[in-house]
Length: 130
Image (cartoon, rainbow, N blue to C red):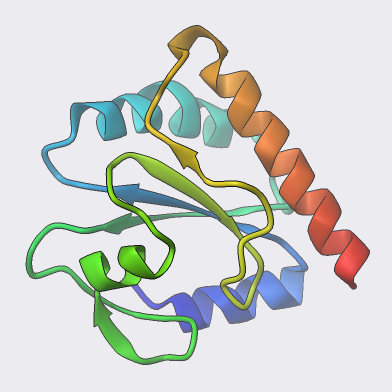
């Protein structure tokens, strides 16, 4: 994963980045992907308005941060105060949070609504900054 490249793409497209902080063996992470993110992508919701990426915090997972520096997934997640998975971050192209992070799945029946609401808020806040 290269967040510097993703940030550059988000900047060109003037789109926020939805970043799922995940683990390979996290059943709730799989649930979010299966029930929320994949259907949203398949339906074309927010196409052209949002980049969606997944970052793993499992041991050995490495990435490039928004500055292009190599870092472990776990260390990167700690920068945002992420202590559990799944966590959704809504970031601008430079990696700054646009909305409050979503930690865990508190209300599964309302989760899609809350994710969509956070996405819309992130898009709106990013557009107001420009």
